[in-house]
Length: 406
Image 1: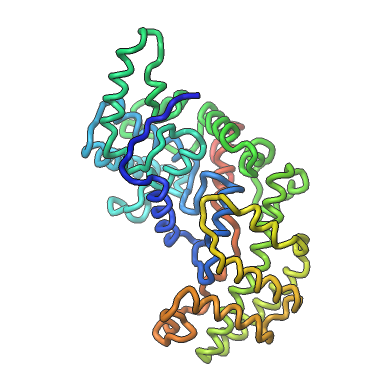
Image 2: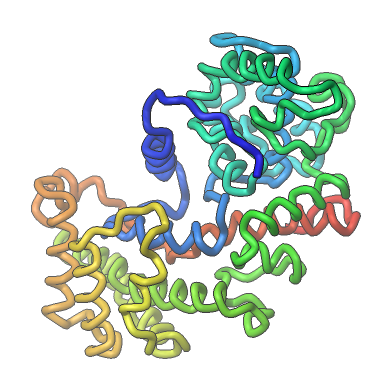
């Protein structure tokens, strides 16, 4: 087992968790009016480890380490290391935009004002897939990379010429494919198209680091598909036991809790006297009831939900569990007829007031005035829209198809 380099500065796990939480505010699926994000993300991390809803294209999993290895090769030191890495990442933007397939280019809109670079978006994923070998936060890496050089120099002196002393201080996987010649400035056709060796490397890393996940199974066994949710995958019946059980509960949780979001918005529409919105959300709840009663996972025991989400790196509080349990009971007891159910309404309003306190839209007119009618009603898909694109990129690279069909 190769050694890893770490240093004591502050807790990198805690820091990365904070950065991940902050990034959620930019994510399409992240509006979490009823405090369900920890459960949602526990499922997403288990099903599709190393992904996020602000990842766009798979080749960034190589662009980022290529940038960093270039500056390590030059022995660039802090504080110039982080600044030069940013400059190189920004240099990637223009050549990527010159291709027909430029969906997902970081900086396409913001340009030089881009705040969240790919290196931070993909940092956790690179670690989860075993491409990043150094165990620290990104900021620690930037600030202490000169310590990597020092330790490499020290270890090099202890080994014979034909040995590999840098194995003790590896920051990136030793079989990382070489970047295109001249990367990134002297390349006329830089694109998101993965070369076959690049795709094979990424698949190998995924299989060896996350072999029990649904993501690994899909990457190895299935062609890209276009369905709205992962449980609608046409090959679902062939999934192996572990990911299939997770997916069953993910569908169960997503379906049941979607009704709570619609009821929340209906109650706000009633309080605001917005009749048209009331009618829309009543229709939404009727459609939800149909989906609830036809969900093939609806009879799963709630206890299994907590067994599958514990220990995933997200804190699921007792209050959150109590809210889910209370809504679960009302949804099944009423068979989805929650619109006129007094207890269902209380469960939802009490949860929102518990989370927001004086900022509750039920009690704060100013907060309610900022409500636009559809708060947090996107059904939980556990990053599936982004995962579909990543899988399409991988499949195209493995099969020499050129552009991914995503």
